[in-house]
Image 1: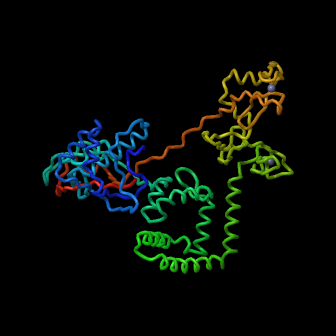
Image 2: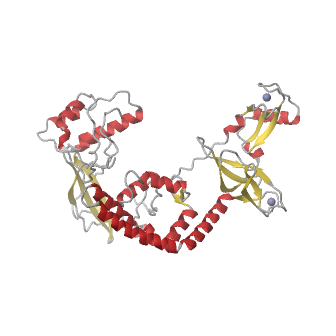
Image 3: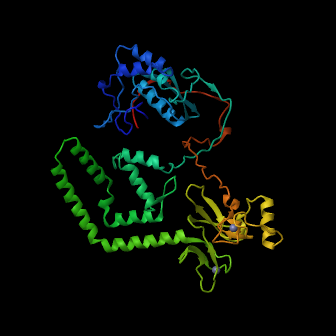
Length: 475
Ligand SMILES: [Zn+2]
Ligand SMILES: [Zn+2]
């Protein structure tokens, strides 16, 4: 960003005094968006950033240089604003929040109500709109007070399992566990995808991935030992910080790795056999498209032929059913079958949304406008004759997995196609993840047991002042 912020690839949460905060704030005060906040901070007698614990020997935490940015894109503007406001907020005063907890005794069943309010904004003002805290006020209650029930809800809620990792969330988990470095974590995840151990954006382990893990666990558990990896990572860091000698660590690491690799070598054949079996199983699953629509007995599988991939019934030579598969595309089974009984595949092409298509091209024309369908039908039947706009030869109807389309009879010399059928079907949005996890709450067995008026026998109004501090964290 043209020198408007410091180096962003840092893991530091610390702003050193040497940065000359007053100078940066003075520069920021020239920017009308930040002038009010910057001037307020400049009026303080002492500018002390609230530093976090993480250090990075190479770079300080990200800070704005004070240079007023020009020509920033929308996204860049947002990132810049976040960086500046985070920087300003670290110099802010502590905010105060008050939490009130009320315990209601309903026939000796204790229900708990909680409300938290910000009583002093402090740094929140400097960090707006990025502070997102719930403000919930509890009504003013006295200890021992009886409360009327105005409405009774019977709720049944369940806890949701944790969400799957995404590439971003697994990287922060790796960081938490001290696995990898900030330079290698993204590559580690990419490797898992490239080798087919995991798939999807909401990460799932593949059968192959699970088998690789269990095989290694069985024969060389040390290799997937998290503690060992973390330890090596820590020791590397110690070398970098000159806390220990390179030779000492290297000798130790060599010892470890030799032992581990010898162990691996001893089991090499067994590991190899298990992994190739796992690989074959995975391939079989990936290549199975669905039941054969002709013989009803066989299974349509992806095969590799002289001219690339195609789909064929595994009862060959008894059943000679074959289908074309799209070129330059990744084909995945969906487990679904079309209305006409054909396996439905998922087709993934670069730069396009994944499409679900029937193996029967004629079933993939549903998105065509009616006049186009009629044109295709008429050309096919010979009722309509059209000349190629490029070479003048007659046009005819061809079909591919994406449906039927009009092409030149002069192919392969003339490559003209009327490619409107290639637009394909729109895919239903599969993003229906819920992002809220609900906590299990007490379930009321029978509401008729509860009288209209309930006595609050025990009630504690605990006023806690929780002081939240700003800490600079994350990139
Ligand atoms: Zn068949
Ligand atoms: Zn032509």
